[in-house]
Length: 194
Ligand code: AMP
Image (cartoon, rainbow, N blue to C red; front, top):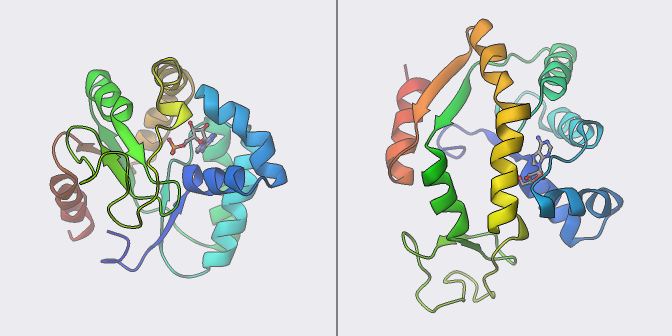
């Protein structure tokens, strides 16, 4: 999607995982929160996103996994105002908890190139090996059952209030996220192309 619309993709999860792998100061601070399925403290994540937005400049962007708390949403409003950039749409990808647990518990990822797999719906050709680069696939610590349960609880307590926040601003668009990746992308494109 980002290629089709020439948008920068800013995933706070990817940025944090890279910081953990490189053992930077941010990575060392974030790791234990991430492994437990807790949110990394707001000030850390907000600083990361502000830096990225300043880097991106005029080009459009998709923020993926951010904001996840009201404090982050408010900080984003201020940052975008400072940069004179508008927030045009907020997509809420809607899927049941049961389906989320199925997706997350079966997910395997390549730590070398980032390619995601699923044990049932997108298995690698050779078990445990990345089709793209031959890396050894891993089961992320935050995709283990206890961490998944915690992530769902954190979402309901800290992130779901953002639905009301963006609905009030007239920006929220619910997307039925059941089905294949291409189907879901087509639903989002349908909104962007309007
Ligand atoms: P994700 O890949 O988006 O599910 O993110 C993986 C993990 O990174 C999350 O479970 C959090 O620990 C951390 N993380 C990512 N984005 C944020 C955010 N906006 N605020 C706090 N923690 C985050």
